[in-house]
Image 1 (cartoon, rainbow, N blue to C red):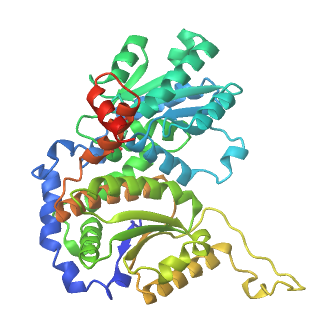
Image 2 (cartoon, helix red, strand yellow):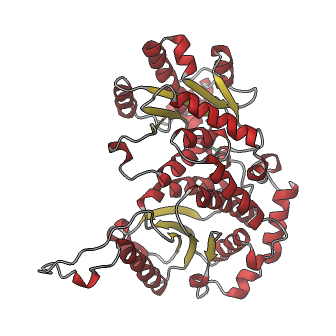
Length: 447
Ligand code: PA5
């Protein structure tokens, strides 16, 4: 079977081969530190060996829970969570779903999300929709105390209990949280929900291959065993001891750090398939939250091409020269659409007649890469043969492993997120949360 490939040939004009290979000692030490747990944040390294360790029993339990929810003939599964407790499932489900799934009722329920924002309109409109549908809830919070999902769950819990009665609502709610800490654990235990534990040593943004991501992905009808198998194979392909020349995670970490050292401060994740939009959102959280600290770090951005070539393309081609691109290239689409001949050829497109739409997309991809390199934008390419569970599993583990290595090379702790607390403190102070009296006084004096 072909594996995911990483190609940095189109960055060599910007970061020399020798300089990149010069990182091999530090990337290999960093990789080892992840496995031996000798680096920063070493109590959050449960994800490193997770794919190879997930047991068939754990997967079967998740599949059984999914089946139990599906037996209720639900139209919708609502996943309540934010950040790492939502983006992984959203990324995988979108990557594998029909683009128009919401408008084509299929064999599996649609998965929708809540608690990933505090928009009143969003919650109103979701609740209005749910009042006309059959549904179940999965509520996810590692800390069990995050405000956004807590508000959404308080509302949706009342709705589901009113709709189905307390006993049946209990059958339709699954909670994923810490083994013992947090308000959600207390609530789930006291209500008697089916619960899953987010391991202590797996941080939110590294948790998609735990029940955090797997339950929703299974309910959506996708093969979680293939996803985990792809990740487990990538665990082997990026293991310490795999030489730098063959280790894509170490290479990607090296190239990004060398480009950053040379002043390339923004990395743009590029796709040519709208199904990958949320995969880039997941990647942005992973890299942004892992590396953006201590006044350092590449800013992760994303674009959907070719759509965004008609909006952001100008800037990328000719704006500030601080950008590099990482393209996720998918070998073959799942479907076939050929461009037809038109005898009148009024649109002048007969030169494309008989070609598949994907051939045009691929030439757009190649032409853009060359144009952007000519314009001063280093281009990295990550390619997978197809967009399926197995290759998404490979991509997920590849990016996680490379992120850990890259963070260590940068000299930060890639597993904490101290900066996320600042807005919360201000929000609680402004909302006059008990315990924040001093902060309330201080912030109000600034208004
Ligand atoms: O990566 C992280 O740890 C964060 O983004 C969290 O996933 C996010 O803040 C949600 O936290 P929790 O799952 O505790 O509600």
